[in-house]
Image (cartoon, rainbow, N blue to C red):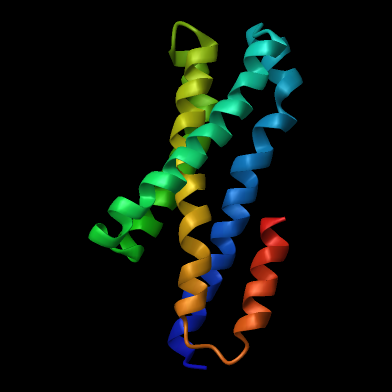
Length: 145
């Protein structure tokens, strides 16, 4: 395998780790959101529904723009959205009038990143000229869960 593709594969593995964090971090904080911000559990569970719904929408819409702007730019945008969404998760609830709206904005931003990562990572790994493509794809599936 050409060593120049190792960094691409590592970035893809990190992409799936980031996606796992995006999808699993907020449910760990349900009680914290409830006790710290006084948000009812019905609104908190709406955050997860909104996250997955927006990710599905991004999955559908990404086919129209990923080919135009390129895979590399799309991957950078995906990681930037995921990171900014997670950072906003700590900042936005305190800035906004409604803590729930602050959380919803943060979830929307990182859901865009998570949706893009879901669509982009596997094709990038498939396109890399590796000798053990099955092994790399299997490892990706492990990280995706």
